Length: 518
Image (cartoon, rainbow, N blue to C red):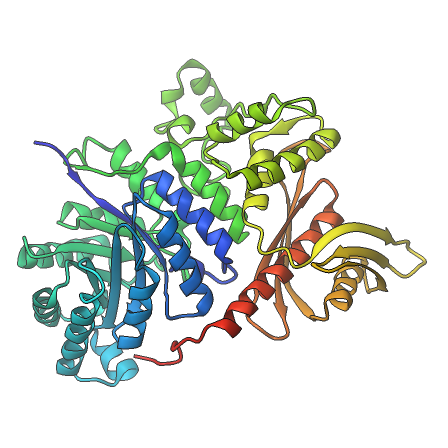
């Protein structure tokens, strides 16, 4: 008997973006969606179309770009949300609307202030209206983990009759144990058999998201909702890479199940998302953590030298991680060799992005003795995910001494001209940011600042991530890359400013109904 395919529903761009500080601009979301498509994700939840004009724009562009994955938009069970979702995904080759309403007593009484009958009527209306835009409709019983089984069966009957094709049972607050999730899924799967696919969406508040998802699979779930690196609200979601590799590695237990995931794209996906969000997986994170394949113990090292299988149940190559990653390219390398190397790393660029990345590579090769795959990933990701270049840093000159006042001279290019300005600050970085503020006219408040080495060596690239709030608005993330840390910091700050301005323009050009609540 052929194994059943478990659908992988990736919600990194929606639930993952709800991680504090993980907001992304449209270009960044498009690049992540393209990588998720290469990964083989069945359904990409591209966002919440009614949440903001920026979300709508990103979903709309992803829908036009991705062709082999279903594109989904989340929508509350209200007409305006569903209409926004339907319009945003209209041009997708394969499309889905995911609508939801809470079904637990605590949510219905305290949040919705609705009776169970009112909730059912709202759910049926939502699914029926969603069917006027798409044939593929998913309905979620929000807080299913704490919902009454009888009521979930009743509302599932009603929404399936209205046209829902998938019933999702989210453990919204990560409360349930694997045995409890298994029992819930088994009962619902047997009850709805042949009428709808049962899906699960497990949060990780008790560290059980992956375990609960695997238990759901053996009890009848045929879709699993998850995120790359386990991103998500609070403690995050079940991690895609852990679920997929558990199913693959323990084929003795999960022989009846398979996925469409190309596992060699797991590591590139993890690195892309960590680079864009600035949220690195913990070093000992399963599958994609920095130490996931590190062996320090002498006993372990001895075993590894004799046979890698003594201490590795997963090979680095199986997730797309090649340890010997020195890039044998330099300042004399040609564009064709550069393009070929990018293709091997999973980057397929248009001419404009390729030319910009190659120019940056040449500059980096002039200054860096050895270039690694991680250097190249960081460089190309940085180029591909830039927001509209309203401001571009041309030069930076600093003066900082123990007896003097830190100062910065900044030269910035705008669409019309070049501007040179100088300023002082409490420190070197403060002087840089205040000078940029003076040029742009926007006052930024630095909320977070991170710097890390991209690879190794004294000449390693510095990757800087900043989180900045401009004019009291929600925080925006910016990225900068350079061997010089201060130059990388300036680029990161300007990157955040450009992202803010590009989203500010969309806010003015489009109106949203997202102020309504369920």
